[in-house]
Image 1 (cartoon, rainbow, N blue to C red):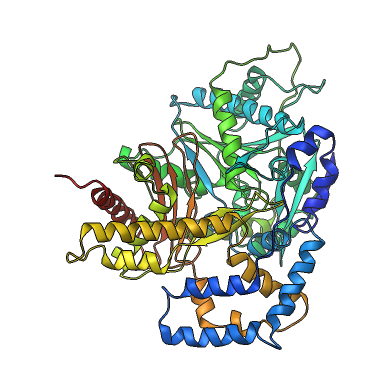
Image 2: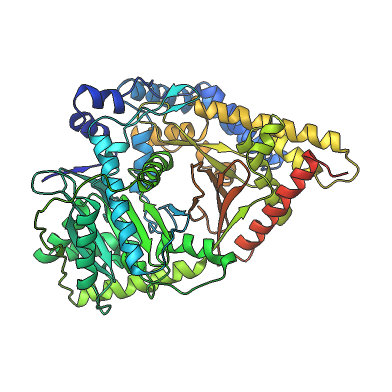
Length: 615
């Protein structure tokens, strides 16, 4: 077993070494260009335009002066821009390593809710533990088949708008894990792993998924091993070790150091970290109405439902965790330092296609070793750490409000019929719904992929624009004609389409602004006043975090808000319907997920009426 500890800076160096062979190079190192550094003046002008809908004109005057000093003679702007351009010439990607380090590895917030996204998929046709294990066996076989495709360089290069996409993240999905630290985390990747970890009733098992001859186990073999694990995991009075991974990262980093002082604990933790992925076999949960089922299931995947439910069946640091419940529910939870939504969607699509087929392999007559149960020595300090983690996680879970709904009046085909971008149309609906609830627009970010560049991750598209604000302010005005409102709607959508195009060309503003700030820190300079400005704090206080995750199935992704007084909205548009998830924190009296979800539903209906008025 080869263990490599990798930070964001060394991730791509590692990848270039382990990905060898012409077919793999064609697959993962496809001919995608380097990510450009946008022109400084263009970014600063875009930043000012993004501020205009958010702050009064008198406050903009102060920001304009700061920008003039920043980019004028003697200002730091040109010097920092030159540093970024120099960095771009000597690295595969000038911002991605910094972004992963700053956004993920240095973040000290807990991974559940705050960071790890969850994807809940359509309910399967079983409702007991027997069906659970049969499907789990199929799922494991499907994931192993996908890994085989990746390992053998047979994964087709993906394209967006006719351009090839960077495929570097795919080999990192398996056998990766985030490692907690007191000041910052790191990432480990373990090549040649032959096992997964299975957790049931808070108990972890190391389960080999390859035979002695190197062949992948068949579904029947995997099923036999899962039956063994079920037979060995009846007792539920075990300490939920996985709860520790839900803690504040500094707290977990300290507990991690104490935990690994014991040899047995270290061996068990390493087995979890080295596994290809983790399978969580969840126990039955309280039945709810059909209306609340999708929300409850999203919550189960996201955080496990609490310490009295299935939260102990998680290892939140693990890059991939498949969750299968006894009631037919299932989904995927992933850690973002080494994973993004689009590669995860590709993985899930492969799994869904595989699950439609019969087991293609005959079961060899090979005796199977019993899956290895992972034990822990729990002293007084670790027991205390677990109790604190349980309390904190339950507080976090109780604070999160989740509302999922399937909007069935129309899907992405309706805006297409009117030559409108479906994603931009939904973004307008979100801004309008937020305004209806809060009587203001807010700093909002939509996630844009940067995979058209080598090593690219994400950037933000800022939803509030002057055109968007103008439409929102006039929408409920009866003195404005329908034709005028339609024209304002088109202008708002076209403006957002332009911003999207800029982001997909690497010309968005937020990663560039972050890069300028981090470059100043890198050079040992004071942080420029531009980033100490009240306007910058307001512009980056993301009250509305959104993300389109298109998939070939009726799945729904969910994640928590970025700020205490904000929302997170994720959507999956299908041809004739759209799946939404809305989250908010209960600690903020001004934000309610249920209210925004209901308002979004009615707003979409109103927009349909605007496009297609009834006689």
